Image: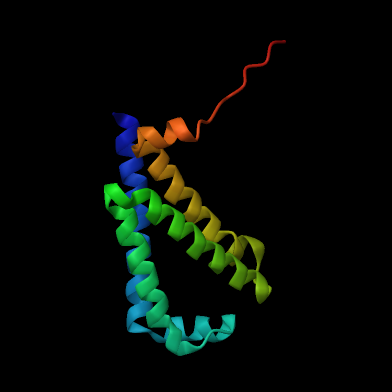
Length: 129
């Protein structure tokens, strides 16, 4: 039961972070506009990106569609990595951050969904010395 609650907490943190980012994109604040320009994206796309984020995170938050949401979030975060790589941003500053979020997306889901842990088992090999 502890494992499920840890997964729920991790997932809640992911949901809160993505919802915060969604709101920033939807209202298209100057910080988002500046980041869009730096990444070579049209400033007017920020609300569209926010809607995509919102749909992905809503699917992730609903237990019946959480795996689909995680898959869609993975695609979204992969795009974020590609955008950061394209403009040559620092590896440990911006490029890896979406990967960390993706690990939390799947880690939280893996911990709170026992069927997923059976589908994707993590095995620790025991070596004899």
